[in-house]
Length: 308
Image (cartoon, rainbow, N blue to C red; front, top):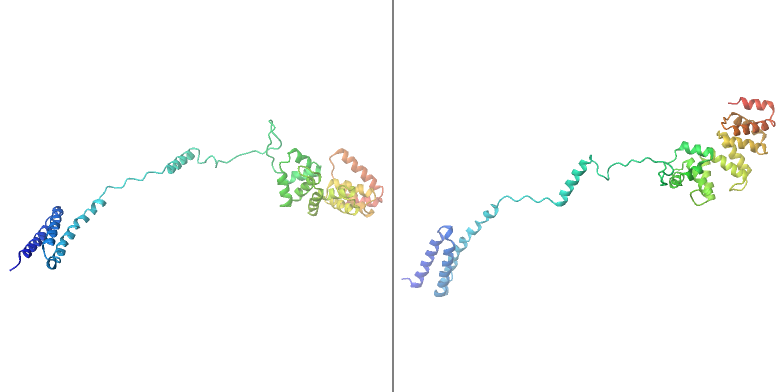
């Protein structure tokens, strides 16, 4: 026959199982009562028998916790997420784009700039942009001897451009111009040695004005020591290239005893064939030809005039 304590423990176990099978809503109640009964049985029952049984009783409490996990779908059942707010920077960018479109698709910084370069200064005396010299106009100024005057007139605005085209690009006309500017200190600190070097660079590329000027410098002793042999070579080469000033000076050199009588006929032909628009210069050339013709035989003069 069972002891009363054993019967009481079995009764508690059956009551706990019956309460665990009830609906989910009342799950919290049995859990609390089972906990009280387990505590009472643990105090009243002997350690050997009741220690194992309450462990089994606690299993329904674990299964009773299961409904707690059933609330997880409620978290996922929340309403649709609210739209993210637009960042202020994005709104500003869109408004800036709209403003750009209203200006014809160009922002103020990307709109093309137009300028019409002019030389000299305007009526208020402000400095205006000067266009870079074209090769043909620069050569024309050099032949007329007014290239340095033009640089001064343009207020030395193109000094750096002239230097680059002389030193880096090695354009003969600009080499001569830069050399002349250095030699005479126009818009730059004077440096005669470097200036003559650039004149030689231009002359070595066959620029007739450079050949003529160097020949004249060696003839007159300007910036360099007199060297008549160099003067004759340079001046004759410049005259052969059709440079009018060199043709006149070459005849003058021959009349002063430089060169050779063998050069007379050729020099006569060059000066006789040149077209001179200036009246005073034309009269000078006529006088030089008459003086040179007096040193030549008639047949040499005839050949010189007939040469093409």
